Image (cartoon, rainbow, N blue to C red; front, side):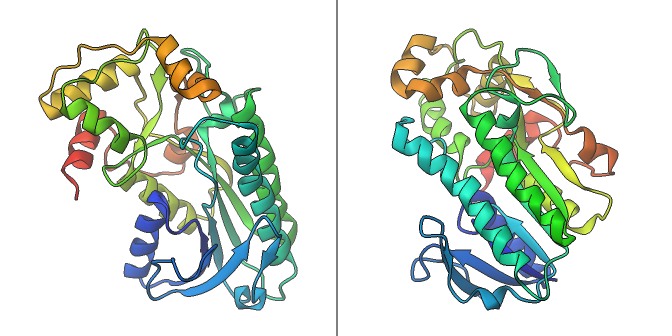
Length: 304
């Protein structure tokens, strides 16, 4: 296939780009800065979401699929008003810009896979079992996800099969949440967050990539799809498992007030509970490579 990819330099995008190139796909990468892009062997097109511009948009003609992963990190720094604007605009305005550009093409892609997040369901749903049919949440990230997904679904207007990739916590030693945890846990200073009963919906990087490839190739997959492992765990279970994998004690719980002090509004997402199941992914026939947390963490911490 000829595939357009955005966000190709992030944790998921880097791994996915390498995998797709090994599979023989031809890639066109949309990047903010051509000189800093590490993408090798791909056509590179510069875009600027803030200005609403895609340079040489004619190079997007004749592609079979789009995998849209771009978005400002939600985990870097406190959520000031400016940070929240960038988080929203990078997703909502970025998706709008891309879909509008694709709609103007003569040969439009027939597949549009767009990143989303389990944050669609809010930050705290306690122990409620959440599937793709569950109602959205009402906080900041949930609102961003609703708007983000609505912009992506507009690709349906020009005939594309749209899949919304509601991703949970991606486990990898190459980036993301786990890389922030590992130094603390390796020192033996790790512990549960608050009471530890809040659910964490996670997925191994290998299955994140596998699920995206599955969605790309499987014509029956449409609209929202949760990209989470089938066995979410509580924070206490996650903490205990990571400590066991690293052979380190996990005796130092982090009090909720410390998280709220450190992260501000974002602290609510750290302490929140989401028990999300990959109902549609499994129903469509995807088989997880790493469905259990212990094996997923062992693979992640041993990866280089």
